[in-house]
Image (tube, rainbow, N blue to C red; front, side, top):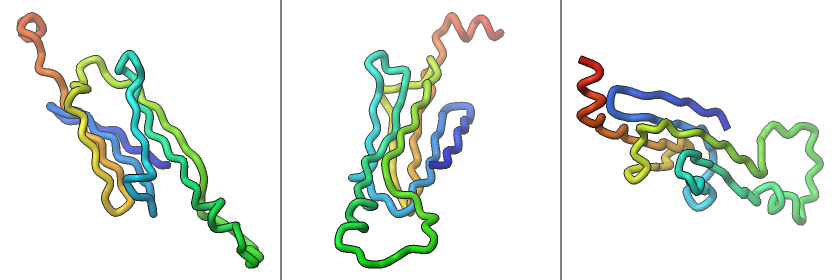
Amino acid sequence: PKINLSEDENNYYIHADLPGMNKDQVKMELSDDNHILTISDDNKTSENCNQGNTKKYSKIECHYGKFSRSFTLPENADINKIQARLENGVLEVHLPKLEPTKKEQRKSI
């Protein structure tokens, strides 16, 4: 799927275009070290559409099947507060940034 990555002062964002999918078809996993977020799907739609189907297609542009995208999360992403929602075929993942420690704040002055 097509992905947009963005950030503002307080958050990181991942937006993924997943047309026709519902939340039960999307899987999100954090790696053991919590620095890699994987978004995947095991969409069985193509298998279900082909069973018992007598249509002969001349062109198929719709994608059905599995996908997996992995993202290395920044060190200052608060992985304990990840939020996600899937609405109108767009998955939005919200990752708040950790508050800088006092040492880091002093360095920037």
